[in-house]
Length: 117
Image 1 (cartoon, rainbow, N blue to C red):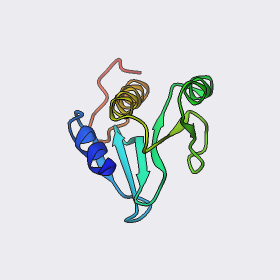
Image 2 (image 1 turned 90 degrees about the horizontal axis):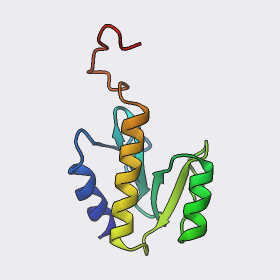
Image 3 (image 1 turned 135 degrees about the vertical axis):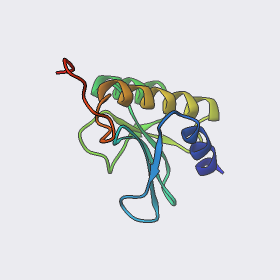
C-alpha cells in the first residue's frame, strides 16, 4: 500500500522518473538524474534527502526516522512505513525540491545556455 502511495505522489511531480538501477526489488525516484527518494520491496521505509547532516539529525530527533543505512554521504533519512501519510508526502516533496534546486541542469536532455556557467 505504501509503495503505491509513494509512486502515485512521485508520478505527480514534474519530470520525476521511476527507476530500478539496483535490481527489481529497489525503486528509485529521480529528478534531473539525481535520486530524491528510494525504497525496497521488503524494506522498512522510504529514504529521502534532507539538506544536510544537521537537518537529518534534526528530523531524526523530532520524529521517528533513522539514518538511511544503505545510502552513504549523509543527508538521507529513512522514514518508517508507519510514518503518517501526510508526513511522508511532505518529506517527499521537500526531498524533490532540494534535489531539483541543487542539481538543476543535471538532466542530459537540457542544453546549457550561454552565460549559464
